[in-house]
Image (tube, rainbow, N blue to C red; front, top):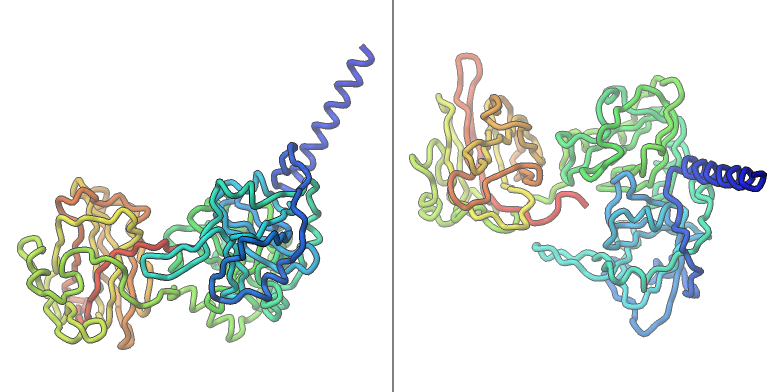
Length: 493
């Protein structure tokens, strides 16, 4: 009996110890069947960075070069996807390892030291990042990127050390001001920001909101310090932890991986436990001019290359063959809009909306569209002005119901989100808005991933509508529309 009690006590203590450890770091521990790596390191991330450039190169397959790194990211919260962010154990040179592995945090939780066999892998150093992967991915637009290491190659390419390392040694405590001043040093590294809080306008909102995203499909939320310095927390559509997180009023600390996108500092938390807002809120100082420019970049999401998408949505969607365009329109055909020769993209033919319509009507409706299986969005190019009625675009379901993409106010390129319900559930139209592209072409993207649209190839697919003037609201259009195309690349990285 005495021996049985001792056994029970010992097992209970062991279980409590394991639970305590798991709660302390909030990440899964390495699997218990781990074996000591047979790979012998003979190079480093720093050496690989020195020999890399923006061109994607393949590491010689006849070599046996091995390097090591410490995992600092986690896809447990859904803010990272098919990537391991690493740092060198000694120098903390950062790198990104692309691999085909969901839930990688179960095998490689933060703090795991791994050894990587470089033979045959691909690498590059672009946008201040060292990227490593298993191949080259070429987009439909011809752009080349580092591809992921295939699932069946992971076990022969990566070995992990059994003993996890203390992440505190790889987490740098910084003020927001210091991070901004030394961002080149800390890009890609794990940082703990002290004495910060969310912008007061964001309190009560969720951290991720699919209706408030940038051109890559991410929600950006502004973080500030007491002196008015700021950066943006970035969360994407694959987030799990962050989707319902309500932004608090309190101040405190945040842990995450620092990055730069389009000259703007962004911050990627890994799990909710990276937030520790346990202090009273403070009154933020006045933001300097640099921060003001960054805020404008977020409010006017413009990280979009202004160029036509991939395949035409329908025959004549570039308006070069006018008869072909007219031939695919649903009756009664084209209203208000007219042919605009040499006014389209690159002096081609476009579609002009000019004048002051007295009625709100369909400009045109397209039917029987065959949608590519890899389409991610519909895009088009736009130039000119509209006051004070904008455009509304219908995207139909197979049953004839539709959602609307309401352009409303526009000054620059933008992803326009669909209404959250169809016309069968309420009014989806919004025509009020002022468009002024300052004489430049802008690109409008209508994402398809969250929309149940008509893929049958039969029936209505797309309608463009204009708004008529009223007794109190004018309607003056001077717009050129061109290049209605499908996008076939992901909207987020």
